[in-house]
Image (cartoon, rainbow, N blue to C red):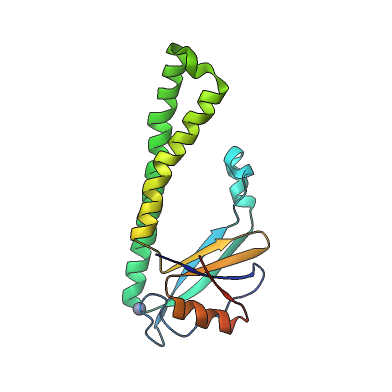
Amino acid sequence: MALWSVTLDTSAEPRFPDRCVVCAQPHPDDFLRVADRAWSWTVLFFPLLHFAQVRKSVEVPVCRDCRAVFRRQRWLRIAVLWGIFVAVAVVGIPLVQAWKANVAVLRSRTVQKLAILAAVVVFAVPLLLWEYIFPKHFDLDVGARTTDYDFRSPDYAGEFARLNNAEVQDL
Ligand SMILES: [Zn+2]
């Protein structure tokens, strides 16, 4: 399923339509705070640097019922992501170590790199499928200079873009 993306400066304060981002009902009675940090490859090697990256948080209008659904989806996603991460670390790393000790071919740098690539693909494919089957209603992708606001609804994205003098991109 396509997502509709609007790019604004990270420093800009976005204006949201006065409608629920999930069910599109006007005048929602609640909001949801969504935060994200800019991503940088250096974080892979120095995880603590994650907390030094640019952080952006926005208040997204939702009605009370949708808020619960939205939150549950978000936590489930984070739980799945961490589950995969831990599984890779717990199962994958000792396995590779054991193979390296026994199989000469795995001592080759190229083979090791290919194995890591294969592991990434094996774990990324279910994640991408998950994203496809359960697309988010709203997502925030913070960059150092610009931030993407992604919406499932093209109407909502269009309204958001108009309010912020920006354009909608079809992802
Ligand atoms: Zn709603």
